[in-house]
Length: 168
Image (cartoon, rainbow, N blue to C red; front, side, top):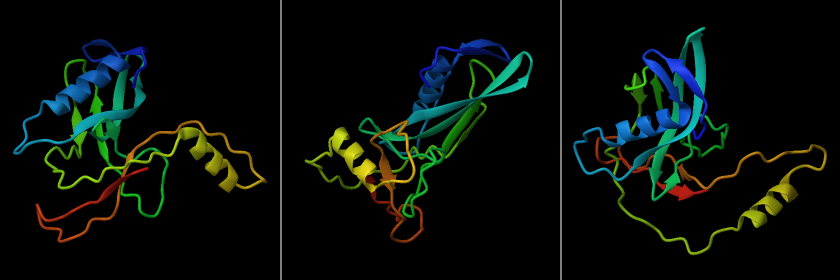
């Protein structure tokens, strides 16, 4: 998302980082029927070549709350309680967004728990390395703090469903 590389789109060339800013601002400024609590955060950009002189930007995104993004659909994590965010979008023109999917702008926050203890990163790495097998080498390429969603509770009626989240 922060890449300065640029590719030709239908109406000109645009840096990936500028396309990401445009997409996030586009979603943030869409009208909503109620107060919005979440922003959108582009987690990854996939660049597809349509033909020699035309490319397409595909955005894998998630909600973001209090500067912490949610676990997202395309990150490769598939734990049993993982209800990953499925925000996505695409751009083939510099000044427009071609599609968006699942922005969840009108979800609300109904209760917050304060966490006073945060596992320091070196400790998390130590625990991960102790729990991994001795027979295979693993390379950690990314670590991040995200919100993970649990399965929905309550009815599935509009406005009655609750989806608990927790930091991970």
